[in-house]
Image (tube, rainbow, N blue to C red):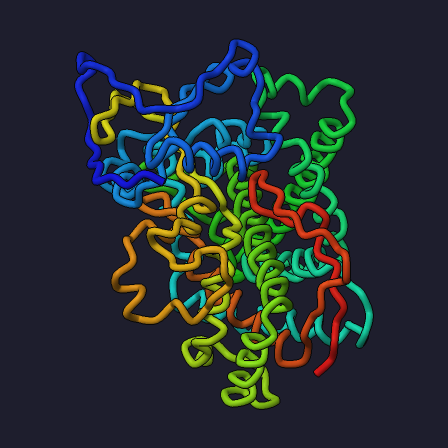
Length: 459
């Protein structure tokens, strides 16, 4: 990969445009969304061939693939006001509406301000016992030597956690429906990215029909929770209570409509369990391939916890588990790509970015860059020393994004990952079923394409 020392800044519209190198595209290629075939390799190959900044056209879009940490920082932080969310999240509004993940400008700032108290450090700490309780319940239901799809198990677990902590609802009876709905949504994602993809969802195409049905099922679950809670208003200390009681001083004290609450609840409901479930799934896979690391994780648990369940106070006392999760999200980042659409003309080094162009920044690519990580494809939690982190460029590792739109639930996710990993590893280890294919599937999040079939072994 080519090195660079690019800096970025906005340009007046009259500036001369110079485009970076990139693959030549035929007319046919501009009408098809080729990344859907294998997006990880598609964008990785472009970066390998053309360096830190590459240009290409896909469908009607102009894309700039950026993998330089300094340029990424400029887009996400320094000049963030010049960018909106890009094509992927524009399309995902079909599911999430104007939720925190997809909304823009003043409306986004208002909604973030209303939601932020639910993720205050003291409130997050109060969620710890619920996380551990559900983890303990799940581990107690497994059978030694049995085979499980750990991807499905982790999805169910994190769904229960987010349902109880943020919505004070036990969604166990609905976990299967939500899991199937999420799979339906992922299967339809790349079709939505095609030109006129928003209209394709209404055609009798099997995977698009499943995606449409999935959205209806999720809507039914969310609206039912809202309706039940409106009938018995009161502060139950969860996010849904806050949304229902929120009044915006800048909007004449009005509260949110059911549609606004639905959009925010859907965003948190899905983002709050899908990404964490994927991170845990990839963690168990990586540990199954590194018995020496897995052994040290268990030794740390025995030393710190013994036979008792972990608490929030133990999170900082489990550095080995923290490093394992950190390294897992380096190799298999649940959010594998960030996109931003330029509002005004922009400049990256010597290159011009026209208005409405999309800047693509991939965690999958940057996290595996040999300039920042020695032996980058190796699972090595021990690389995460204080000295290493001090020398790592800020956006050489950004699993939760960055800038004003950085994931609002990052602290929640870190605590949940460490506590659930410790709770489960205290009693169980996992072996990958021989011959099971492990293939990352990049859609909205990075899932294992064929699930993760593993044999549970009781300690």
